[in-house]
Structures are given as C-alpha cells and as structure tokens.
Length: 191
Image 1 (cartoon, one colour):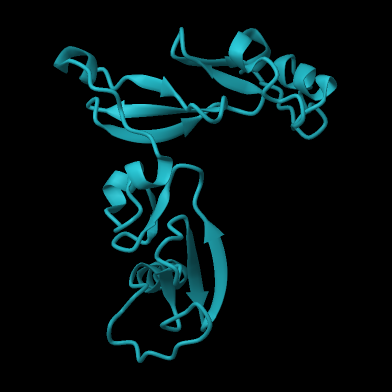
Image 2 (cartoon, rainbow, N blue to C red):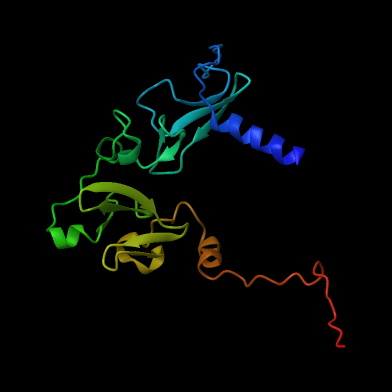
C-alpha cells in the first residue's frame, strides 16, 4: 500500500511540474528548479529542457512537432499555438485550395524538398508534416509510403545515405527466430 502511495505522490509531483509556489532558483536553461521549459530562442520551436533539481536535459521533439509550453509536451504546430512556430512558418508549405469534399478527406501532398516526408492537410487547410519509415518515400500517385526505389522521382533519394545492402535489408528483413530457450514449457495433466 505504501509503495503505491509513494508512487502516486511521485506522479503528482511530476504532473505539478511548473508549480508557481516553487521559489524561482534559475540555472542554465532552467528558470525554475523543476519543469519543462521552452528554448530561450523563440525561433527554436522543437527543442525544450526538462529540469530536475536545476539540472537540464535538452530534448528535441520528433520531426514535424514543436514544444507546447501549455501542455509541456511535443505537439502539432497548429495545436501548440506558439508564436512563430506555426505550420506555415516552420514548413514553408501551404495546403493547396481544394473543394469541401476533398478537404474532408485530409488530403496528402509530397514534401517538395524531401522524398521521405509528406503533408497531411487537416480539413484541407492546416499542414501537418509526417514521414515514411527509413528506406521509404511518399508516392504522390498512390498517396502512400512505398520503397523509394519503386518511385521514379525518389529512386535515388537514399543513394548517399544508405548502401544497397542496407536498402535490401530494410525491404526484405530476415525473419525473426523464435526464442524457445527462454520459454518455460508446461505439460498439461488430465485428471
């Protein structure tokens, strides 16, 4: 019972990350001793600091996301609502005008500068950058990710990044062997 109680207290402390009653004792990147804090340079949207006892850990959001000061997590730019960190400013991409029926399907468009990425236009208006897994590229015709070598305009995209052997291994992974050595076997007895 007491272990569960201590665990609950720890969670409550972590959730109360930016408690205003905490006396400010700033250190490098940490305006307070504990919490999640945006990068000091407001033009840097995807990096934030997690501070514990005044010591920071720098964290980078996954591609396409920005740090939201309101929630303390990485979020889509349009949901984070951070000045200068909106989808249009970050991605230099604007969703093409489409009719209402197409907009409702959240259309996808290739990133003009990066074969591995594409944009999903939420309600046809708000771009959200998404990516294909390593070795794949976004196919503008099918609107899906596929192996880059199968898409003519992206066939050489990984040429300087991955060897042919690495691409082959990604496209045709070896089957995983089942680990029977670590599994205990039980015999059923009938009565």
